[in-house]
Length: 378
Image (cartoon, rainbow, N blue to C red; front, top):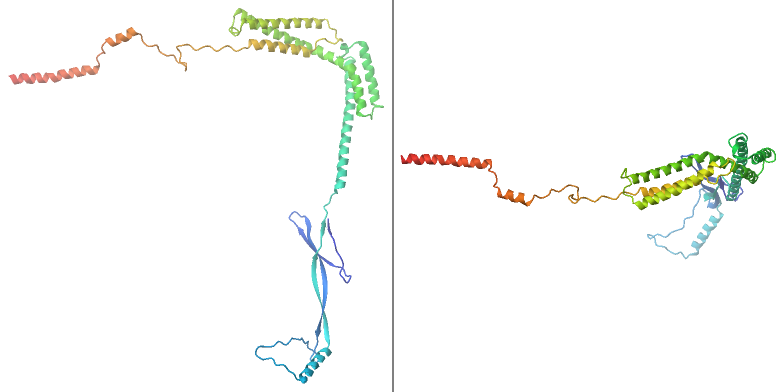
């Protein structure tokens, strides 16, 4: 939105003309870039008219020239003639003309983008925050109500003829069932539009009676699994000690006897703890809370494996390199004994084939000489 300010009428009361420059960019956005008011000023001028010829007469001042010298006239007649001319000029009629001048004056442009003010924007932001908080509170309230409803239906189905029934005595079971029915009736009557904390309080009251039953069921279902893992770890460590004692394998032969005794002592303590815990479980009733939980069984098993296998899994010491082996692993040949070396030096080298050829060539070269000497004697 564009507003052109400081628009005023003309001095004579007529409306003023406003000139604006608009711009339309390639995106189709319209904008006013300049605005100006046209100010009209009128100026009046008088023009003398010649009554004789009806021709306008303009007065041009006499300017002396350099060709004609100026002569001052001192005669009174000349003065009278000049005065007569001035009187004639005063008696001539004059015409008044009016000229108007147009002048543009820039006007301020106030641009207002469609939107809200800062105060309105702050109010809207505050309202938005309030709505977000309200939605969050409503969601938390609805989730708390649904949690109570879900717990009521789930616990009642498992406690009345379900898997939780044998893990609770009759008195506590009937008490919890009555509380579940009461809570269900409250949800669909007085508790339809309660706040979050009312539902949380109801749920905690039900869990105080229901969670011990659920925990006993979980412990009974998973106890056998953890006990089997514990006895399996005991058996593996016992087999490792048996291998060391019988020397059936060199896997643990590098372990000292003191370390094996330490492992055996830990194994004995953990087996004793396992036997005591198993006896407790054998005498435990289903509706009673166990003295040892599954998490404790897992913790004892982890401690057994950590302490024993840290000793049994010690790496073997590295074997020393033999003396007749070089650094790169290749064997060096032993030097020959002194007797063989002297025997080799005393024996002459065997004749080569080239030597035989040389001796035969010498014999052949000597034979012609003997023949030649015999021929000369004859």
